[in-house]
Amino acid sequence: MAPGIAAFITFWLLIALGVWQLQRFKLKEGIEAVIHRAALAAPVALPDTPSPYEKVFVTGRWVPGKAGLYGDIVHDAPAGPIAGGELVMPFRRPDGEIVLVDLGWVPEQNPSPLPEPAGETRVVGYVHAPILPGWFAGPDDPSQELYYTLNPAKMGAGLGFARVAPYTLIAMGPLPPPGSPLPEPAQNLPKPYNHSYGYALTWFGFALVLVFEFFFFARKRLNEP
Image 1 (cartoon, rainbow, N blue to C red):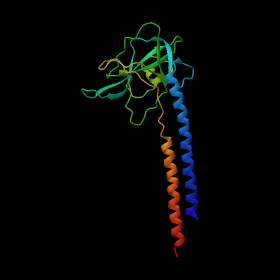
Image 2: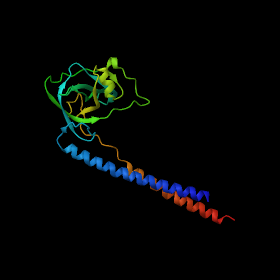
Image 3: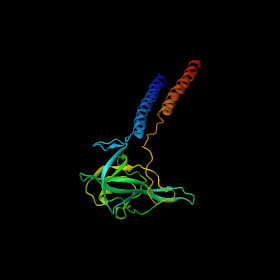
């Protein structure tokens, strides 16, 4: 009796997990459709509650002479691996709010502010929520403006700002010429990984295997003297 009850409960648990993954698959398909439409459309003005899956723009002015470097990212090159990171600079909106803008990867290990235009300008990109430090994240060094966690509050404080937007704007734009020291901005909106259909098949497969295993187990028990 006990093996049958355990197998029954396990079977329906596996089925429930498979159905849950199918629901996640449909949800991610909907997100991918939203991203596809946003990628084809013109950027919209940054709303009060921005989504990470839309192309937005902000207007304002660059704060001169300030920059931080995020991450320790190595890029391959014909001459060999090149160490670098994401160059982050502050951007002041007309209402005074500071938005940290990730301008893209640069072949630097110490941040160097770019000579951005001094007047009113516009930046196109998408928003990225703060990232909590992982177990293996390196220690941030605000004195050198080097950061290993994309935390706008901490980076903003290191750059001398008491209040910054609670997200980072990931700039989008054309790639610079090969070998250029200019940042390499993002080319596409972020897409969530969608392996849920495969996971669903795995859970349903486990349920099917359980049925066969229990069938042979029960037949063996019935044939015992």
